[in-house]
Image (cartoon, rainbow, N blue to C red; front, side):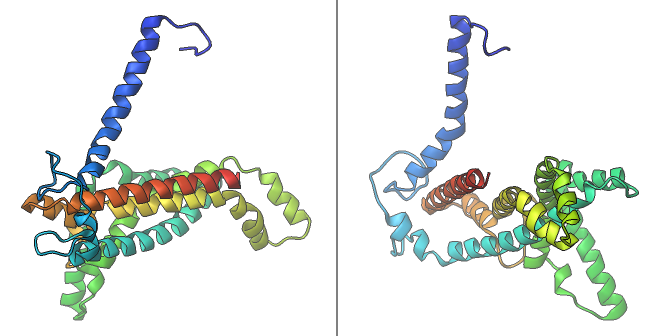
Length: 284
């Protein structure tokens, strides 16, 4: 459809109706969740019973707010720690992989690129099960043959980090590679001709050009790790992440404190997205 051509009234109203329905379907559940976080009811659902802040600040036996709920606060802290390490590892390795795949003269480039993309098409459940079985097999091998009990091979914090790192790194690589394709190689050649070392060229020219993409990729990696459920479900140990903890609460029955947590996550994620967009535009 050529946008400059005149459109019929039917098309115009149909297009507006589609946009309205799409964004209503997208944001109405989030709006309802945010509203129910302030509902004066023992159940995380309608009808509306009145306004309250108990699900944020309450400290009663029947109404424990999120800021006094040690179990949920602990799960948020665990998710934040996992997301921090995953985002750091994924950003570093993904950026290096982007440099690697921009090279034209190394063997098995196509095969390695295919293997890098494979975690994106494998369901998270299958990926989690595969990592769990592989780690258990290695753990039993070292225990039976060397008498070593390696905690890394048991479900727990670092296995969750490695499991999420295995597929989030691919996304970071794709984001940084897209930015790297727009880089003018003559800038590097000019810097080398002026006496700069290879390290100085990468630090002051290439990485400076890639900085918006690296920051954006790191933010995406953090958010994806924080909310990941499918893969984490099979790798988590005694320290449950927030998605796992919320799943258990919803399954067993919970109070509107889960709406309060959702409200804080929606607000925090939105602020982080706007901040990332602002600084990316400022950088450009």
